[in-house]
Amino acid sequence: MISKTYTKYIQSLHEKKFRDIENAFIAEGSKVVMDFLTSSKIVCERLLATADWLKENEQQIRKYPHVQLEVIEDFELDKISALSTPNKVLGVFKKIIDEPINPKGTITLVLDTIQDPGNLGTIIRIADWFGIQAIICSENSADRYNPKVVQSTMGSLARVELIYTNLADWLLKNKDIKIFATALDGVGLHSIKGLKEAIIIIGNESKGISAEILELANEKLTIPKVGGAESLNAAVATGIILSHII
Amino acid sequence: MISKTYTKYIQSLHEKKFRDIENAFIAEGSKVVMDFLTSSKIVCERLLATADWLKENEQQIRKYPHVQLEVIEDFELDKISALSTPNKVLGVFKKIIDEPINPKGTITLVLDTIQDPGNLGTIIRIADWFGIQAIICSENSADRYNPKVVQSTMGSLARVELIYTNLADWLLKNKDIKIFATALDGVGLHSIKGLKEAIIIIGNESKGISAEILELANEKLTIPKVGGAESLNAAVATGIILSHII
Image 1 (cartoon, one colour):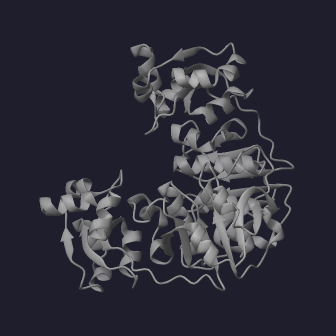
Image 2: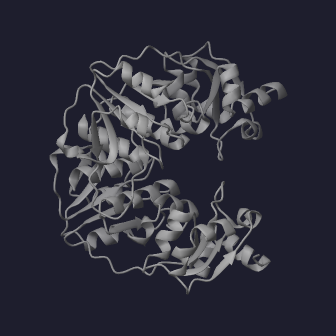
Image 3: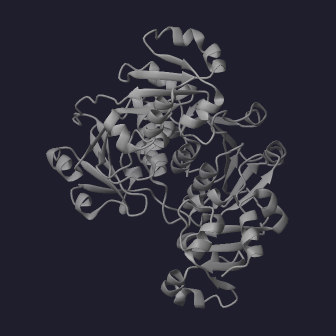
């Protein structure tokens, strides 16, 4: 049984404004919650789960005696969940304390105004798959603590650093590293392989990369097209590019 | 002004059951509606648009004098739209009449139980980008006329054939073509290039490819992993695989 106050508190975390005030966010479902519990970078404030789920995961949960546990009924989960089909467990976590990012000697992703939360989450998951350690986001990108972002990262949020900053300033500070921009009129990405150090810019879902940012790139990269589609989804394009250059 | 009956008719098309009965589906937004209007494969039953949109697109629309046009108010669009933010125009279209599929000499995608409409739509768009002409779906895959599928194809639905059928039977009929299955324990896909004829099987979002179908494959393909993510989104994996083998 959760109090009315705590129910309202969790509901408020569905919105960015309150996540910023409270410095907290929610994550749902066994896979994501477990990945966060085992991460040394993420602190769990409270875990709310159905009796069923707790029974199934009793042994795992015992490893985290510091976690405050609460058994809830399905109707209570319905109230606090951000999912259309709530999934047995919801964790309230403190926001991640980011480590400073050093793009030297690695591949870094730069996202210029990725606005769809599902796309951002999928890109974080792709970055994690390809061993990318950091993503630099423009300030108007989707919030990484948006419940839809958290769910679509499938736990990868705990393994990839994200920084929200002014992209032009950040790129100028790192101009000794080669900067690639994804575009429809660049060189075919089959010509680039085995990159060890680079910055890769991915643009907005409909507008692409803004002119100001595009100007700072050293080279434009294109995914060769055979058929009729005008463009590819931003996350799909990110996956294809990383799979070729790494 | 649309009648109550036609409003109810369009609302019923949000559901598969009624799309099957009426042999029709809806599509929304300028880009998708225009791609369908210009396609010789799709017949428009009625176009419902705001006065604004019609004014902007008057010249284009004049090219299709047979299309039945209806000017509607925003509140009417809200009622019939399947989008959370309705987008000026909604078309009611008759279902596509499929041409017979011949996988000889081409790359064909086979989808084993892709259930998320957004994933299916994105896969259709990727297939279109890479010039794939046909996708074979298991009977329990998401419906290609689901409004979320239609929207995420971004018009590609008009350019890629889809067939829903028993996958095992279809694969057995085409066993003279090499069948690749995507899996976590196959050969790295960097070793395969420039395929001209193949069948590529993509599995369900969480369960992968079913055992029965996996058995029919000649080779397993894997996207090499560097980092910590357990898996990739099904659409992203499809994009990466096609970009390497074609």
